[in-house]
Image (cartoon, rainbow, N blue to C red; front, side):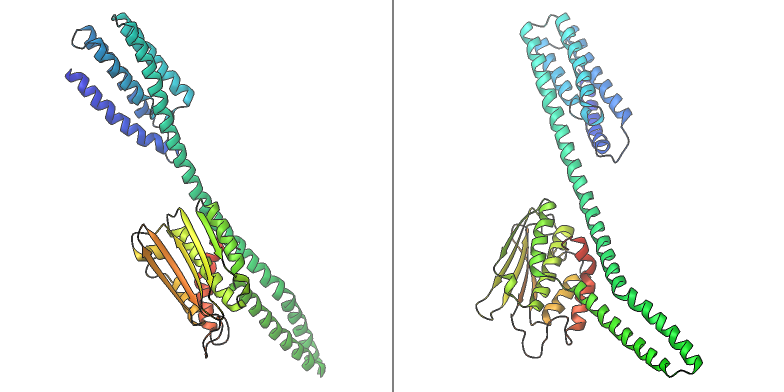
Length: 389
């Protein structure tokens, strides 16, 4: 009996080892654990042989031996499908089950006990095998989803950079070519002493100023965010990531353009933080407009708050994304707050008046240019990673 206890203890330890290494192999992060698999099968066969040896020696009764055999086969069928194909795993368990039933019949086990052994062994093996396999499959799907989200974020950033580069090329390429040609012409005319050289340089100056203005428009358009587009995009991205997202929009299209742009950045940054830093199952984005010129409130709430307020807000304490948004909203007389509530929820709230107070201009205007640019620089890459544009 002491030998049987040692075999059973070794069987449990090997089962835990094979479960871990087999799961890593199934997920594609490690090689096939051949030695642990061979050792586990050998220990199972040794345990079954020891049970029937003790039964033949009279130290163990047949009614006590058959449940032990079923127990060994059930636990063998658990991690085995992680390493071998389902067909090979089932065949190996079936061979051991057939050998066990044959040995029990040779030792004079009753027919009822043999039938119970077969039924228990088959049902238990199927239950354990399917449970292990389904759990591993679920983990692999989650792992592939995470990898797909990272790939999607990188592709979105690359696509946004290409779009921005294409816009700059379209705007500046032709003008720079014209400037180069007219400059060469002005040089040649100046060498000849022609008075028209001054006219050519004046034209070069005009084109250069026009190019500067067009480049500012491209950058401004790159940094602005349309609120309705951001709301729709946030819902699509979050749902694609397996997060149930609900949008409550009470009139985003009726807000001033500057206010839509500022709140669009809040939606973009909040969505990015939920994807990057929160383990959320649901997210609600609410837009509420007050009566008349009352304040507009935008709230982004999710149930994936991290272990600390900084983690819940979506970054370390040195992060600058939310700080840039606060500066952008402050230019409009608004505020941005983050609060953690019970149940692991986090609420990001932006409150902005429809009409900015006296002395303030829209974000991105003359007085608010610096704040708007800081917010845009803080989250320019994030807007590509949340995939809303």
